[in-house]
Amino acid sequence: MSNFKFIPLQEETYQGNPPVNPGCAISPNSRFLYIAAQYAIYQFDLWADDIEASKQLIAVYDDFYSPYATIFNTMQLGPDCKIYISIPNGVDVLHVINRPDEPGLACDLVQHGVRCPLQCRHAAFPQLPPRRHALLPCDSTLSVRVGMPVPSNGVMVMPNPASDQLRARLPGPALRPATFVLAGIGGIVMRRADIPAGAEEAEMSVADLPPGLYVWTLESGGAVAARGKVMVVR
Image (cartoon, helix red, strand yellow):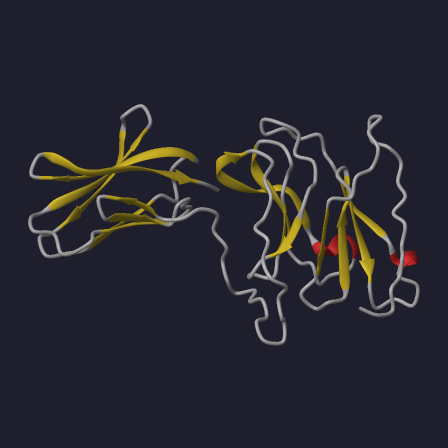
């Protein structure tokens, strides 16, 4: 490490709470530094002659609860070139900076812009080794989805959460005709997709379904062969 610089982050208290600085991240082009100060987020231009003077306030906590306060916590650059911001309370959302290479408000920070399938307590990101951008740059064409496919008796239903298309994949060719069924929590069937004998997967559109938790079942021969849950998000 060389050319060390100390930049004090001074801010007023928020509703009587002192500032806390739990998170930071650097834009994909290595120009902008983002600092999360619990109730505010700042951007610094690392290419500026006076980095401290380049400080810009780009977000102030908007008093949103889901179900607890969605204040700012740790930050991490995703493989899709966006910066994600976690929340220290037990909530089901993340904040996101959609264009971190842009200066000021053009970086497009969206508070609670990512809905998670589950409520997490003291949400934090995994501790990953530092990224070598020259060898492994982020790719803005990627689409990051929160959650993993749900296995049940070898059946994979993905993506989970889903927003457009939902696909059920069997562990092998169906020995007899089957039906992939999607129902609301109250048991009302919303979608059906037939799986002919010899096929291994089925797809259905969920683009027009209300967001929420749904139950899927794989039915064959008048019996339920597999069951699971999937989130539909917008």
